[in-house]
Structure formats: C-alpha cells, structure tokens
Image (cartoon, protein in one colour):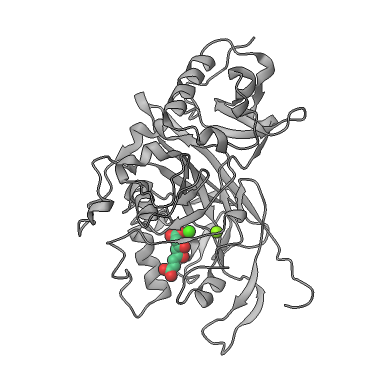
Length: 396
Ligand SMILES: O=C(O)/C=C/C(=O)CC(=O)CC(=O)O
Ligand SMILES: [Ca+2]
Ligand SMILES: [Mg+2]
C-alpha cells in the first residue's frame, strides 16, 4: 500500500481528478485517473471492468448518477492507502486517445475570432454574417483524424491558389495554422428525434479537453465556398489526453457575454455555462498567446442544444469543439492567421520570427480553470509537431 503525494499547488489535485487511457510496459490500454503526478489504475482499484477498456466510452455512457458515484469513490480512494501496484508515475506511462470519437463537430463561437477571420477572408463584406448572433455557426469535421496529444502532424497537401494565380496548383500547404479551442465530450446518447435543452447539458456531457484544430489556410481559402471547411481542416485535430469531468469545472462557471439580440427560446437556459478557462499557446517553447475562454459568445450548452434541435441523435463519444478562442487583444488570438494578420505581421518566436508553421515546429496548448478554495484545475497539454509533407506518387 502507498499514499499518494499530491503537491498542494498541483492543478491535478483532488478537486480535478481527470480521466485518461494509459498503458505501461506490462499493461495494455486501460482507464486511469490523474492525481498530482501519478496515474491510478481504476480497474485495479475500483474492481470494475468498465475501466479495463481502452476507451472511456462505456463509462461515459453510464450517465450522470454513475459519474457522480465514481467521482465520490475516487475522491475517497486517493486520500487513503492505495495499492502501490496500481499507481504509476505520469511520465512513465503512455497516454492514448481517451475516447472513441463518434461525430466531431466544430463551432465558431468566438466573436473576436469570427470578426477577425471575416475581415481576413472576406474583406469586402461585413465581418460577421447575418446569422452569427442568432445561432452558433458550426460544421461537421472528421472524427477519424482526431488524435491524442504528442502525435506528430504531417503537413497536408492540397489545392492552393494565391490571388495572383489564375488556376490552383497542388502541393504542401504553405499556410499551416493552429486553432486553440476547448472540446466537450458527450457521454449519454439520445435517440433520433430527441433534442437536448441548454439546461440539460450536464446530464449528457461528461467532460472537457483542450483541442488544437490544425488548419491549412491556403487549402481552406480556395475550397470553402459555398459549403464550408473540408480538406483544409480534416487532416488532424489534436486533443489533450485528460478528460476533465464537468463537476471539476463548477467554480469556473460564469455567464457568457451579453447576447444581443436575445437568442431564440431553444437556445435559452437558466444555467450558466460560460467557462472561465485560461489557455496558453507555446510555439517552440515560447508563449505567443493567451486566449481567454471566458470571452466566448456562445456557451457549450447552446452548441449542444443547437446540434440536436433538428432531432439529430447525439452519440457517446461525440466531440464538439468551441471554435478558435480569441480575446480582444492581439496576444489573446488563438490562431496564427489572426496573430500575424494573414501572414503580414510576423511574430517573434524566441530568436526567430514566424508567420505560419514550419516543418519541425512544435505547438503546446494548455489550459487551467479556477477550482474550489483557490485551487487550479489543469487540463494538461495538447502537443503536436509538424512533419514534412509526404508527396504522393509524383502526382503533385
Ligand atoms: O470564416 C471563415 O470562413 C473561416 C472560419 C474558420 O476557419 C474558423 C473555424 O474553422 C472554426 C473555428 O475554429 O473557429
Ligand atoms: Ca476550428
Ligand atoms: Mg481539424
């Protein structure tokens, strides 16, 4: 038996208790909870096979009563004696994608980001489209390309057309970018035809992760009219390995900014689901931006309500992301296309300057939120490094 060492200033203290999927030299992928710098094997300590699986899906499908009960058991467990054979140092385990992602939907919920991108992509129109303040604009992404933090990202190839070219050519993206976002994971599914109200959010949603939605701006700018993003965004979306359960975010809940015009009734709720989460974006080890989630116009509860209002079923493992998080200040922008204003204003990255990503660059996005009694709730990192493009069969 052993007792867990939980540093007092850890953002993985007993108020957090995020879930992940880990393996070691001797055990295959299974579910663990992070406490301080340790990972506790839940199948071994709680004796329930639902945790001996390589994804959180079966547990997430069990619903809120069960999530609350397990959190209570873990809170008790980690403050007492724990079987030493079930405890691992976090830097000695391999972390895996924590969920089998069902559908992946990405929104566009930051007013600052949407305004900036509108100006950059459509300089001759109003930056916000007329629908933007009436509904959380989103699109369906590609779940098979959701990857866990630490997975390298191969620079995508595609059609590129600069304004001075008459026709597109094919080759590696030259405007490879990031999008700093938060993502939310659905636990409890619905049936086709059912809807979820904003105030039912916590009955369906299990927890949250940090997201980097890699984006190829040159491919995107050429392909997106009129149906929206496609290959420019479907090659890789990275998520952090720790899923922070919703109850750990209780102290972070705030009102969204004032929504004017008032949203339609199906997008209204009594509960506050704005979230006071602070992100940071590191480029090759240098912090270049600190996006504030607190500024997001649409809440995740409104995004889920909107996703299901037509009767579309929600599935266990659905991931819906907030869209790029940008605050009003330049150093709060969550995408490099905004930070460098379309590549025209390079940023300092240590001793170098950058506009878009170069091969070998590494991005680390992390996030924390206020916890109870002055503690911090950590999400950990979402990390990714760019590998050179793989050109296919001379057809480039
Ligand atoms: O306004 C556009 O045409 C493009 C918008 C985006 O690229 C944003 C997007 O994919 C959603 C987001 O992450 O905010
Ligand atoms: Ca995005
Ligand atoms: Mg993507």
